[in-house]
Length: 180
Image (cartoon, rainbow, N blue to C red; front, side, top):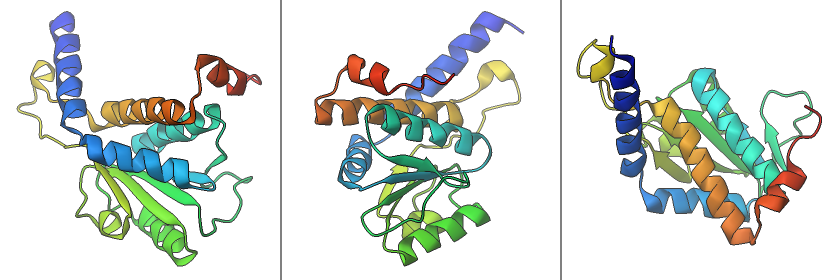
């Protein structure tokens, strides 16, 4: 395996996927975050790990945010936003959380590979990261990764939120976790 060629393939594939994400969808997610009283995030597996970055980013922008499943997460209420990260948009537990959030009057956003999924159809905001199929089993002949791009989407949204709120790197550093 040519390891440099593999890195180049991963970077190229991820860049192509990121550029395929709709700016209008990213702007809609940004506005939903700015409009929310509080932000909740949820997801399982790699999507769950990556969407937690959005919670961290919102926290560093001075917003009140929670990760679903954590013992300190309060009840969701009208005016709140639940953001689910799910490659398929059909993870059963995430469907239950989406339905509950809507039942309690919260807005729902989904970052997935499928706006027509079960959760996508419930969502007020959909950000779609295209999920290309691998061209072959050769690791050097791969497309981009949904999960890599999900993290990049979270970072882009943080930049948009910071800009909208007039915040700087100093504000992020002030809100950065210091109990590491």
